[in-house]
Length: 432
Image (cartoon, rainbow, N blue to C red; front, side):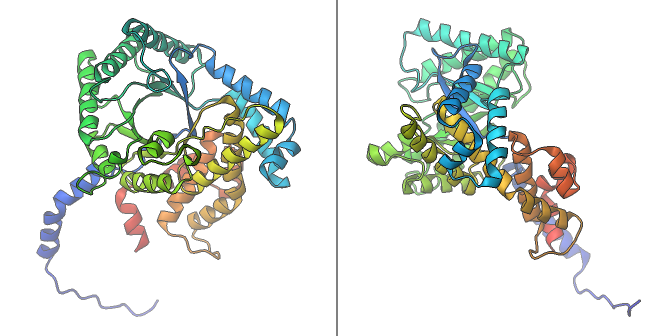
C-alpha cells in the first residue's frame, strides 16, 4: 500500500450546513420543476382521425390500408429498401418488422379530432359524436383492440369556441367514466394555445372534473399544441412555452408542434410550410429547451404530402416522409404526426432503421460503461443515460428485441431503466 495521505480542511462544518440551508428552496424548486423524464413509453407518432370518421375498426383499417400500400408499391424488402435508400444489411430486418408492426400494432397513439379535422357542427351532433367516441374507446380498451394511447383533441380555449370545447371534453370524459373509468392510455390535446393563462384554465377544468368524480388529483394530464407564434415568444420577449409548462401545474405531458398553423401564423407561403423550414426548427428548438428536464415530451408535426396515386408518386411521398422522420429523430424529436395510412410504413421504417443501425454501437458503449471497461470513447453518466434511453425507445416501438439487447449489453430492461432514469444527484456525483 502507498503512503497514507494527510487530509486537512479549513472550513467548519457549519459553513456547509449554512450553504445547504440557504439552497434548500432551490433544491425543492429543482425537484418540483425538473423531475426528469417519466420513464414511460413515448409513442413514435400520433394519428388524428376526425370525430365523425372514427369507428370501431379505424385502427385495423389503417393497418390494412398500410399493408395494401406496401403490397402494391413495395412488395418485398429489396424494393422498399431501394425506395428509401436502406442498406442491404437493414433491408430485410426493417421490412419484416414494418409488416409485423402493421399487423400487430399499426397505430401507437390515436387522437379523435374535434378541432380542425372536425370543424363546427350543430351542438347536438358534436355531443353525440363525443359520446360515441367515449363508448368506442372504452370498448376498444376492454376488448384489447385499442392503441396504447388514445384520446381526443377538443376545440381550443379561445372565446369563440371555448364553451363548445369544454362541453365536448365533459361529454367525452363523463362517457368514459360511465363506461367503467378512465383508461391508462388516455391522452388529451389542447390546440391553438396562445397564453399561459389558457393552459392554467384548462388545468383547473381538469381539476374540477377530478373532484366531481372523486379521482386522484393530477389523474388527468394533457398535451399542449404549439400552433401560434405567441406560444413561442411572448410580448415581453420571454419564451411563453416555458411558462405554459409551469401553468399546467404538473399536468402537461407533451408539446406538439403544429406545422401548418404555426407556419401560416408567421406568413410562410403554403408551398414552403414544412417541418424542416427554418421557422419550424426555431420553434421546436425553443420547445425542446423549455421542456428539457420537466418530464414534458416534444413531438414534431406532420407532412401534408400524401402517398397516393401511381407508384412513382407514392415513392416520392414515401422518400419525403422517411427523410423528414429521420431528420426529426436525429434532432431528438421522437414522435410526430401521421395524416394518412400510407404514411405508416415509412414512419416505422424510419424509426426502425434509426434504432437498428445504431444499436450495436450503442449497446457496446453502454456495456463498456456498465462494466467500467475501456474503449475509444470515454462516456459519462449523462451519455449512459442517453444510450440506455435510445435502447429502451427501440425496444418499446419494436425496432429491437430484448434478447438481442441483453446479448450485446449483458443488461436487463430494469438495468436499462436505472441508467435511463437516474436519481437527480446520481449524474453529478458519478461525474466527479
